[in-house]
Image 1 (cartoon, helix red, strand yellow):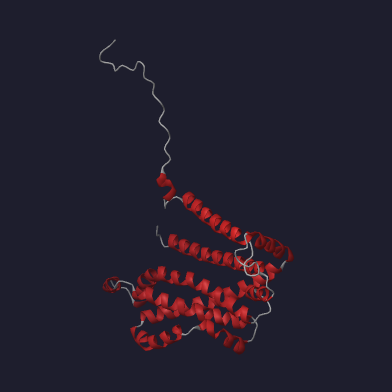
Image 2 (cartoon, helix red, strand yellow; image 1 turned 120 degrees about the vertical axis):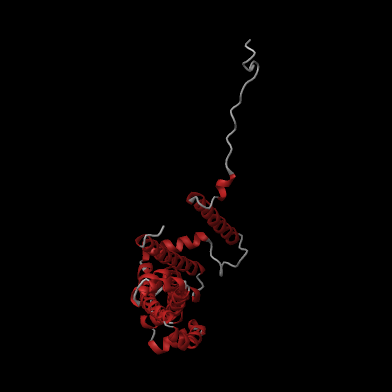
Length: 280
């Protein structure tokens, strides 16, 4: 036997057992892992809900099972009511958000750019923003009727101040050295506003827009719950009055899906704008 070679007589090598990396279960950079945890959490919540409903730990008059909610949604879709009422709520939400966001961004940029306007208007804006505008929904119904206009105005009142304050904060957060440098390099006020201020305030603007679109939907639903002929908010009240919890939870599920879609839309618009600006 060659003494320089290690002796392997009588030894058998076993293949190493594959090790599952536990870190993969908590990897925040893996979309697959994130979705696995999301689905697991959703299954846990729905499963617990089903158990509570099946054991009647809560009175069925107040809590419907997930199966009952799915059955309601199936018939609700077949009846066509979902399309009519969802279209009304979406239309009012988009109109209120569009007007509120446009004027809110414009007012926030102007007030944030002008120290004089900020000092003059800040007390009044603070008072208006502190008012519980959702609580004024009955007054909007009285002033503008039970039609779509009252819901659009209510949504507008919520979105406007959210976007205005977020936009103004974005303008105020711009480093003064950047604007001063642009001024020293010969940039006009218009160029400094567009190239420095507006460019730097975009993240804050979109943060306000993402929040504003959800509050727009909230304002519309609250207005519809008070007085409306059509809309998902009106459907919530109708099923509540008739003691149909499956209908209530089913319509709430539809509203949650709409809110998720609107938020995702705003996120995609922000990402597209970021790529257009050359950001990573």
